[in-house]
Image 1 (cartoon, rainbow, N blue to C red):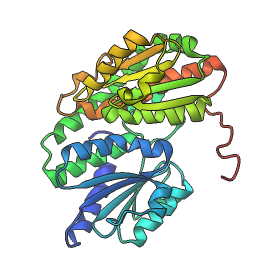
Image 2 (image 1 turned 90 degrees about the vertical axis):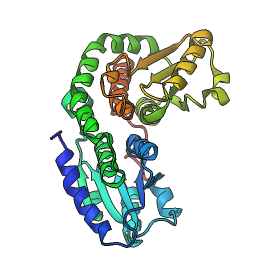
Image 3 (image 1 turned 180 degrees about the vertical axis):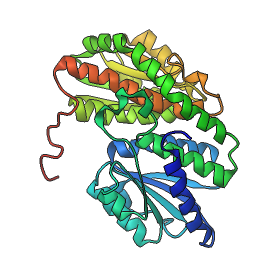
Image 4 (image 1 turned 135 degrees about the vertical axis):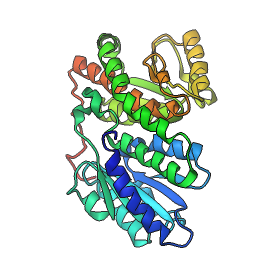
Length: 334
């Protein structure tokens, strides 16, 4: 059994039993969180939307969920709220969901957190900032936990044929990521020296890798390095954003394996012609295509996310701007 999967199964079997007691059963799955925690659920949402014909799936910012609650939330809805500790808005979202009769799961870093205590069920994940330096933990974070839940839901509610292949992929990920992390150390150092002075960035990607695009832009660059960054979907690049491209703009392109790779390749072709200060991280070159093609694309972010943190953290070291620095977060009421 892969690390963390039994805990997921134990909780999800209880959740399924709850819905079997309700007329209509499970119809809606909503992931709720803020910032990086919301981004971490994107591969799970992408997977469910791509593969499920029986479940309606959505993702909401916690405060938006509280103040503009979807009308579908009720006895046929599973609400999964993610917060490492107890982000106030996310705790409020759990309380709101429970008040409307939804079944709630708190994904959290601590069993005694208010997120865990407020939900009917909770699952803990590994959360230390240095997790990305340990390949054995690559799927034990919030993203990996949400993805395990999503694959289990597909197996139970859609008779998903590739569940065993997904479990095999989880088993292979530590080896794939471990090799990439080690082999890319020189490249990360060179990246750090090349881009240390850039204060405006674009990050692009598609498919499940959108999680990494979002997290890079909002968490790693803006929150942790205090530099401006625009997240751009590769498929949307040619519908406005490409007009800002020039030879001085720092652009990070995250190339996926799978069905949306063409979108990234199209963007790369344009960058090679008109840009010049761009960098490409390719999941295929890092070995993700060794996974079964039926499930590989859903693991793009699981590989790319920690790799980009490795690169940006190296840049932070060169800039003498630690990833732990914050200007406002946790220091003021806001």
